[in-house]
Amino acid sequence: MLTLKYFKDKVEAGCDEAGRGCLAGPVFAAAVILPEDFSNEMLNDSKQLSEKKRDQLRQIIEKEALAWAVAQVDNEEIDQINILNASITAMHRALDALTVTPEHILVDGNRFKPYRDIPHHCIVKGDGKYMAIAAASILAKTHRDEYMRQLHEQYPVYDWQRNKGYPTAAHREQIRQHGITPYHRKSFTLLDKQLEIDFGKE
Image (cartoon, rainbow, N blue to C red):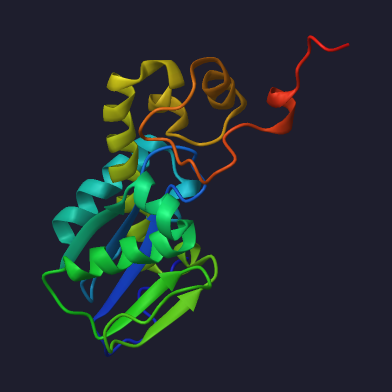
């Protein structure tokens, strides 16, 4: 059972990101402020939910939240500042876009940089503990998945509509065969060692 808030008497925003471990595409982050009386038994860590349930919850969250926002950092900026900094930057951008200023921020994970002068708490596996973080995880995930399905139309060979840019064996094989796109993260290990073996030298 998820807890609604960390501090019951404060306006609290939950933050989470999606796409941190991908080989291609941006990292997305969301910030969500839920109302005091929010309740939904289906709400959980986005990774524990089916795509259908995530899409249903996205509509509920976007309709019922006091405020929500989604932001991204593209692959080129990820390569410049690294994925950890990019994830935090995306969260800050999402917080910037909120129409309500939070008094406290709950962040999924164990690393964050202070945002303005607003206190924050990092919660490891927070998307399975607090509703606002779970809601943020769902928005970040669904918005990113939608974006990757759009990119799939430009580069269908990489099957981003299914793998969403994550490092599946099939995705790496397509990189080996076809090279990289403008959306691949060049600072990541795009090919594993097995795919780099020259099988002609026996």
